[in-house]
Length: 435
Image 1 (cartoon, rainbow, N blue to C red):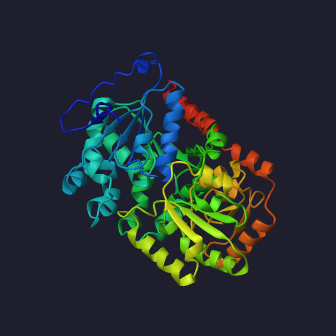
Image 2: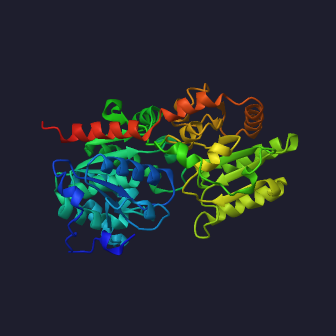
Image 3: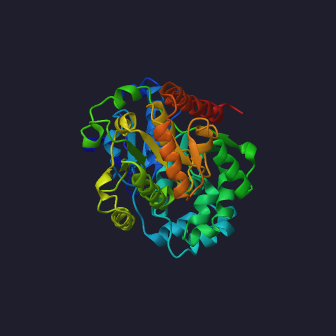
């Protein structure tokens, strides 16, 4: 990525003008910005980059506003998309800044922000985000994580600009809120409710997420729009057919079970490993877990715990964690089965993606949009969260009697990037329509 294409917002510095010739031909379109903590390999970041790229391809000037340029997806940003890297400030300054320009939110800010022993990782970029809005003032700013949703509203209020804020609820809020050990999350609901009400649009990635958000926070359900995350690209067939040199996929003599996602607590890989061990006792099979398993700086404790469990279960020879991949479709197209073992999800990208590659799916009946994707079990077996025996039985049954490939491909392909882009484009039109 050429260094000259990156704008680093420093205190008091004017952001450089974007000199892309294409942008000067489409000034009639609204300027869109997407706020993200980084471009790591998580689903939120990947989906935001996909929709930003799709809208840029439709002619909208698009900018990514990032707290960090780290992450494997940073090198995947199209040249036509500009990017700004925010500046990190001190914790005390950021907390004071959160209160400035937000007197109506001050009571709700006190416990989760001002008095919290540890602030969110992105709060320290709040003063810089406010400066960015003052100087750049995009027509619409999309945020995609719970804390940055709140921070986008705080920054807009402090900046005094007319930028519309669209917040995105990407996960099942009640589960995210309840399973956390963070003290500040226990006091977050009033702040989230009041700040989301000040947003110009609330997007949920599934109907289940929208229902949960409204029910748990007291927000008006009618104020929440469902736009499924951009999941299945037009070229998924080409990408799925790319070469894969993993030895387990060279022959079809031993079925390979696949899981995709970083080894966080929500993925509940211990249950998956225990279920696979039960399967392994009854028939030869292999398990591949794609994610950031080999990154020495992230998830180290969880990875170590998983590796210990794999050894204790006696399945080390048939479990592999290759790490992150830019193209999981190659694995999905060749795997015998994809398993989602999550405790909760927003809308799991891997489920429609796997189906679009013709890969059968077994999933937990977890809170979130997976039940919608599988149509309550019509397109894949569903088991209760944390039940390794039920999961093992579902894996064995799916290996023995997989659903028809054409049925899976048709269902998965319906969750297309184009469908999601249409939803975002309609939302942009509604936010910019004259009153």
